[in-house]
Length: 237
Image (cartoon, rainbow, N blue to C red; front, side, top):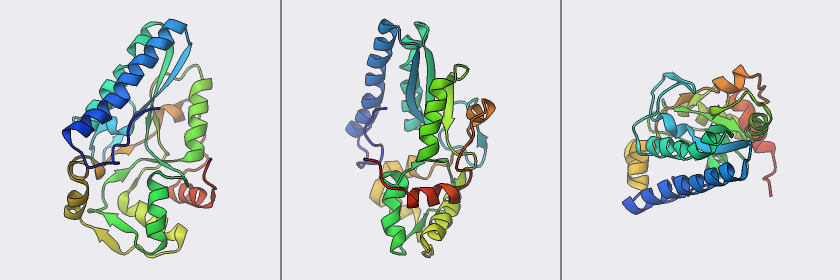
């Protein structure tokens, strides 16, 4: 896995190029090394951003790519594995959703605010969030590595994507705090710029069809279970 964080800085032309280069270029180098060394399996990162904003339409691995900046990044990121596949390696492209980890990411950043009763729905709250617990994320990677029938794109997301409003309410329940606030879209745009307008509230109702077809069993089936697990877990060192 590689790449600078897509939301770590306000987007500029230079930072967007850094987002692109830090993913595509190392993957090309890695794929070439896999091909030259005859490594049999390559598990390569991608993201659900591949699909772009898809509203409330259910999305599985057969869906086409979106047209947003991050969708184009993911498309080229995945294409950068071609040399490994051409050499005969089994290439698995893991399109990861929002990993709920106590150490950081969405949950780790949200918990302090929500714990103070400052949790807020983002925008209209109707956009879908494809989440996965950290435990299931790790287990799914191990499954993809060990299962020879798994290849190509694999959505690393939980079985029941939720809207932002549902996520906000669920996190409030786990932390026993109210979630009455709303962060309006214009405020998000002022803070995050293009990232907020084009990506932050993109709706992706992504399901893990390939994992389920191959018999993977999730430990955490609902957002409530995943958030409770993250809240009660110690950060990994």
